Structures are given as C-alpha cells and as structure tokens.
Figure 1 (cartoon, rainbow, N blue to C red):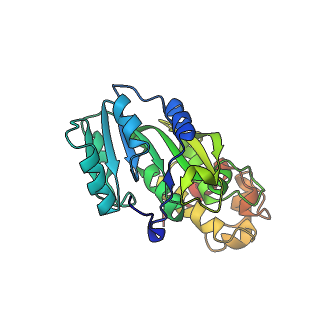
Figure 2: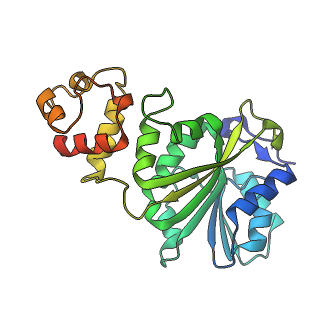
Length: 259
C-alpha cells in the first residue's frame, strides 16, 4: 500500500462510517460532473464513481495517480489528472458549460492557498464539499473582532455561503493528523453579497489591511486615504482592520480605487 508522503501533507481517509457520511452529504447524481482534489488511495473515488456521471481526479502524487488509473482501469466515467491542484485550470473541465462540483480531502499544508485558487473559478462551480483542518474552517466562518477573523474570512464572505457540516477525528485518517478536521460545504454565489466595484482592488486592500491588522485604519491607509475619507464612508478611522465587516472593506476599496 502506498505510504503517505509528509511533504505533500497526505493523510488518507479510511473510516467507512465517515466515508458514508461524506457521500451522503455530497449526494452525487448521474448528471453531476465532480472534480475530486487528491484522490489518494481512492477511498472517496470509488463511491463517487459509482454515483456520478463524470469524475475527474486531480492527484499531485504521480505514483498514486498511476495506482488510481490501474485500480479503475476501463471506467469511461473517470479521468485522472496527474497535476498540482494549486496550478490546475478548472475552467477547462467546464468549457462546455456543465458546472463542476468540487470534492476533496484538502492537504493541510496548502488548504488556504487552494481555497483562494478555487475561488478564482467560482463561476464554474456549483458547490464544494471538502475536508479541512478545523481551525481553517473556524477562520472561514469567524465573526469580526475575533482572533480567527482575517483575509480568508472576508474573501469567502463576499462570494460564498459556508456550512460546517461535521467534525472528523484524527483516527479516520492514516496516518492520523495531529488536529481535528471539519467537513464543510461551500456554495459560490452568482453575485457578491455586497457591492464590490473592482475585485482586484478589493482583494489587494483586504490583503494589505490584514497584514497590518493591529494598526488603525488611519495608519494602515496613510498615503492612500485620509481619516476624513474613511469617516465619510461611515467607518471609524481609529478602528482596526480585524473589527471591520466584510462590506466595509469593499467601501474602502472603492474609495482607494486602482493602483
């Protein structure tokens, strides 16, 4: 059996009860086009393939990709892509207009950048059902003012609805991770939940402010916006970025404009 590679953050799901709960939550259908990120040893690949009309598996480990090809050889419904999920062009799997459903046990060491990558392709995605480190899900669903609230929270709040479904203990994986996991459902919205005039300006401002989260807005935005401008947007210049609501960042980005 293929051993996990620590460098790739591999923790293979093996608990049949947990696998059953995940498949029930996903509820795959014959008309679905599912993309599984990190097929691993095929714990989810097999039941997904039984139910989905089309399954694409993205696996960075070339040996595992070969094993999946060999195990499911002859299945016309499966395509294994030996590729890095962080660099993969998901739009090419939906170039005929059929939307994608993303599924996966996301590697802990790249989960946050991978979420940002998937967000780029949200117009091609119906939903995402993924396993993540519990603390990442806590950040995704955090409220303003808390220690977990940050860039990831704000960016996802603009374009997705998030539902934490259930926690998964370390024993469900081999080797067991040192942290608990959470299975989460993410549904991209067709339009943002608040007005975002320029996505690039918004993303840039959010990243900048959270790199200085303990500074006041007046200090963090010195040279870009005056205190009077910030106040005119209905936001306290003395507030810290971590206390702002997601929509507040969009208003500030609109004032700041392009670089």
